[in-house]
Length: 220
Ligand SMILES: *[C@@H]1O[C@H](CO)[C@@H](O)[C@H](O)[C@H]1NC(C)=O
Ligand SMILES: *[C@@H]1O[C@H](CO)[C@@H](O)[C@H](O)[C@H]1NC(C)=O
Figure (spheres, protein in one colour):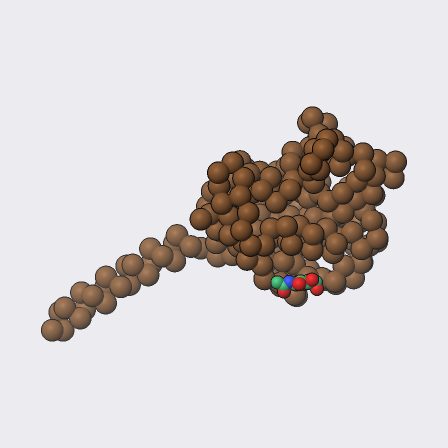
């Protein structure tokens, strides 16, 4: 009896260990280890990392091609004809990698003209940074999301453009979406206390409400 109980206890421990190893964590707080929730826009200020795609999402979503497919499912695309407007920005996610350039920058895709139209008339866009350094390897994707003005305004951020960009992206993402035969179920959760509210250190001096939305994206 005792032996059977012990055996099943050990089995349960091993199974729990396997589950914990596989699932890891949603994200690590970058500021806990010298990082920042603002990226470096090269202007003396930074853009808020206002959306996180959880490390507990389906692993395929967190790869470069998987993130791109998910972005396409929620109305974004790679930049118009590969023309890159503006320099890459960098972020320090407190994972031991230090300041690293964005992985990719995606812009809102319009039904006619795709991202070329967005480049002309402005719209929503985001940069992606991956938290995968040796000391905080969550695999989470940190997004700097903002809504921009049109080309004549040199892609400046609209008033309240960080909060608006985040809310637009999140409302496109939540629920069921699909692209290229992949179906996603996405749930959102707001986090306060990670990103400071206000305009301190924020690029263009545009204040935010300090909310970061955590998206957990599961492939059906
Ligand atoms: C980021 O990209 C810029 C421009 O391509 C490059 O000059 C810089 O060295 C890169 N920084 C890092 C940390 O890779
Ligand atoms: C998160 O906060 C934003 C801004 O206040 C709000 O519009 C949104 O409904 C909230 N989302 C969730 C899931 O609580």
